[in-house]
Amino acid sequence: MTTTTDQGADHRDAVVESLAVLGSGPEERFDRITRMTQQAFGVPLSFLNLVHHDLVTAQSTQGWEQGGSVPASMVFCSTTVMQGEPVVVPDATLDPRFSSLPAVTGEPGIRFYAGAPLTMPDGTPVGTLCIMDPRPRELSAEDLALLQDLARWAERELGQAIDLDRVRKTLDGLVPEPVSVPGYDLDVVTARNEDGGDVADWRVADDGALHLTIGAVSAVGRAAGLLAANVRGALVARADRSIRDGGPGLEAQIAADLDAAGAVVSLFHARLDPTSGRVEHVDAGHGLAVHLHADGGHDVLRSLDLPLGLHAPTERRATGTLLLGPGDRLVVFSEGLFGLTGMPDVDAVVALAATEPDGAAFGDRVRALLSTAGADVTVAVLTRR
Image (cartoon, rainbow, N blue to C red; front, side, top):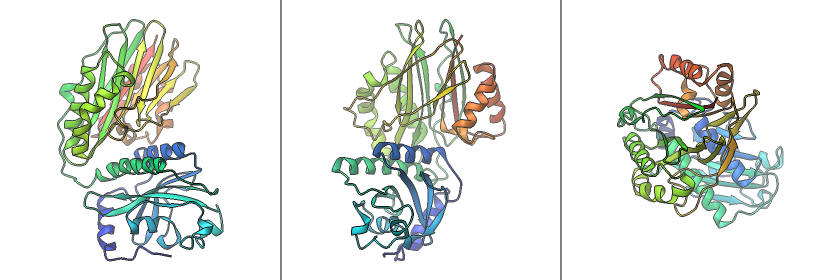
């Protein structure tokens, strides 16, 4: 079995350490990627692994223990990292490279493996995004391309910490003015720091519909804030259209800038018909929106659509719908909320929002948490009275 002992091992270890994520615990930005990967391929196991000092650490996983480390010689991913290109194994029991691995001969009896390397801008492979299944299976060329696209997204997220001195253009002056929608309250909290790239826009279109967009730019270097401003400008230019209808034009407009900066943009866009309470929504890899029902229940809104920068501009995005009944709330937020005390995940956000009588009170609680943190945070709560 191939190990990770090679001439570039010391350099790889240094690069992994510079990412400042190893051993940091669960992070929603990585869990979102492995969750979407698991759902997209319909597999029981998905991993975002990092290789460091001949150990493979599960930085994020779905269906397995997170944060665990095993010797690189005992797992598939060391081969993927060493080769620096995707590895697909339809049936591990028939492949002499992997047939004796503990995960194959014992529990969980892996047969199928596919992994794409995670490579940093200097060309150093630092880990993998991979999927596994106890059943043998094949992977089409289209499926492999999707796995590689998802790996590119993971690379962007990992690379954010490399340039610690990056400075972004503040978006404080670009936050839109408050809006009034009869029968509804829109409460918004925004906070910016020099490293953030949150995108936020809300406005009432000519037909009376409310358009609400929350998102974030994931970019290495100084580009995040500038790109966030560009994305918001493109959204404003299409204020009367949803991302589903105006998406191809929006994505074509910003595609060159995203590609040049090596960036992706996650967005959640909602269009509210105030008369009916019907909300159409499009989720471009964001996954941070919750429908809180007046009776105490809730639905976390998920999507399999990729972020802007990874989705083909010519393809229309999937659209979801919900009915915002009296007393219901739609809570949309950026990833920075997870950096606040007591806000480690979506469940904690739901719990806090549910204990507050309205969106304004929830916003006040978030502002109180912001007073002791320099986070880049956007939270919007749309409530039907």
